[in-house]
Image (tube, rainbow, N blue to C red; front, side):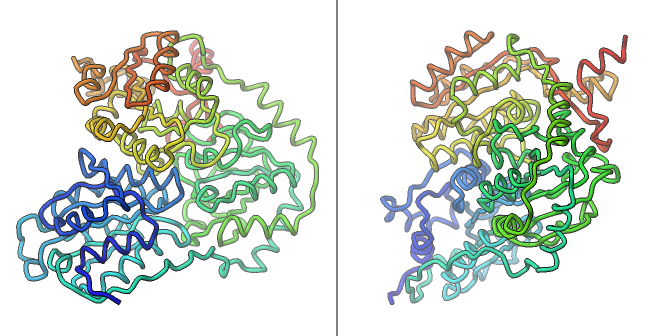
Length: 562
């Protein structure tokens, strides 16, 4: 046992947890921690981002790409509050993250001191837990507890706020090995399993929806085994991309507002819908009262609070998805369902994708990225039309390939997340896809990539408008384009060069193909500015709150207007 300052205890606890990278931004109250970090820079790599929000997004991207806990740091006041959007993003998508902030001295708390904020209170609704440490003797155990909470059960962010005097005070420190993270199995009830097995064995038209919980539980092999055993087609949510191989013949595409017609129609033809690790988001289910109207619904989730929250289900099994799927697969009968398989194949023939891969459009750009990277890249996105195109046209064959803000829908997420993903998995080609509206929100993080020569590729799908909002204005607001036109003089190629990266402009597919191949060879930060038409749309689409079977595309609109 040895005596260390609070700051040294923080660093030692990070080392205990196997943390190799921290993203952050220093300031007055956290200076002691940064001083301790300086002495351990050979063991813990710190990435100085351009903004604290970028640090939170980078920690999130690191966690999504690696499956490990992401760590970010910030000082008190505005430093801490700048983390909030990133923390909320991680919370909505169940991403394990630990945010460490510093606060004013204990004696200055509650006095509106300079840069004082009750950050533990601020983030209470958007964390699994938040702590404020006012006693150095409680610091080590609090940090250890934070890491365990972030990873146990349904993952999520945890914040630890430490007062400045605690970072300087001295306490005994004894190294401890991290507690093992056990899979949640004590909630798996025999009667729930029995009911699930009965429903599956009775089903003639089972349909599986894979959500982000499959990825969090590392349950993709078990999901495939179940699908093969019961001969079921499989769709996914945005967060579930890669949980099931997107090139597998069973795969029907994404479900929901911008899901495929095949998935959106199949869910209402099924007699049993098995939902694994998904929370029935409004963007997935449309009209809750009409979702899977002809089917029984079986929900498998680690979080009991998600059962019957948005959709009332017929049966549920609460527990770790990997373990639950193993138990169910060992109990059910293997059966082929050729009639159901034929029905799904007929849907695929009837409703093919109509994306034009020859035009210089969002779908064609994503398809070209898929071709050039042979489907092996890590893709991050911002939020909007480009996000949906990235979900639709890149075929994800394994988990942790698509990193995207699903629940919060955070514009500006992508560049930071891309940096974190590339740092976490440096051997992967890592590409952020953003619209011009999203990119300008946090394009300052290109400077971070340039500072550390982190070779990310930023593809800006630039239509000079806020594309998704404009799409809604076109379809539902009488083409009244209120504050969605971005026809200004921002030059992203010049911006990229000014921030220390390489900038390339592409105005057609041939130019883009060359630009992307050159970017991969350069092995440095590159921004590719792709100029596309402002009225390209994401198809298919379900109007907000409407049943999934109202899914329509441009061909439907043209037929309706004839």
